[in-house]
Length: 278
Image 1 (cartoon, one colour):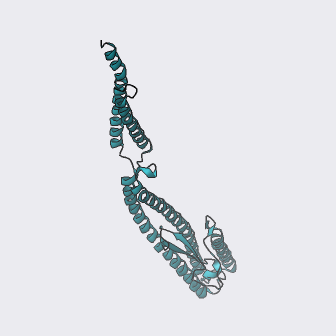
Image 2 (cartoon, rainbow, N blue to C red; image 1 turned 30 degrees about the vertical axis):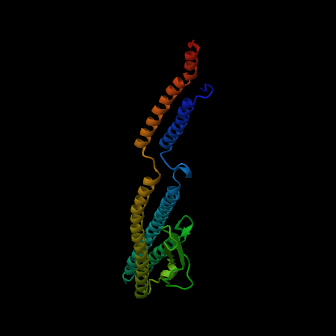
Image 3 (cartoon, rainbow, N blue to C red; image 1 turned 45 degrees about the horizontal axis):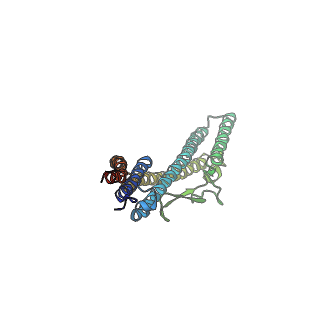
């Protein structure tokens, strides 16, 4: 009989060591809320989990781009509304100036207000910007309704998922109202009507882009929820299940400690028995 090696105690210690590792893993999962804290936790799932996590992050970034782009278009539309109001006032003044009952002094007052309104239109054109992006870019010719600049905004996580934002020239000169003459009412009214139509077309273009962005935002929101749900099923820890594992492993650890305490006395008990043999 060998009394120098307590194999039973060694076996219990090995079980105790494994339960300590299970206990620490369960506690770590509960603390982090994740069951994939390293690649060894589930080599087959860790790659998919990281891919889904990247999709969630890129969707969030695209949603932020959409919000920023919408904010920019709302800023531009606010200034275009002011320009439209100014054009309405210009037409009102032009019609008023067409009366022969006005004196030269009256017409001069009207002309001064017209000049002030044109200056206000140019101020809105030159000073309206969003994060350094200006409402208007100058064009090479007057009455040009083609975009003078195109900026892009990414609205998804794919290469071709972006939207083009056209920038127009909405200065008084390009709108054709920089040289209004109250002595030529018919021509002035035609110029103001053309300018009003140009502004309306630009606002309509921006409005359609905003509608597209809002639809894309709703789609991304729903997509993000689905991706997060899939990623959660793979990577997130089930707290109730992990707590059960923790409690189970803790119970086994405590039991192993008690068993080792008893098994460590086996050699001593054997020696006591041999000592009593006569």
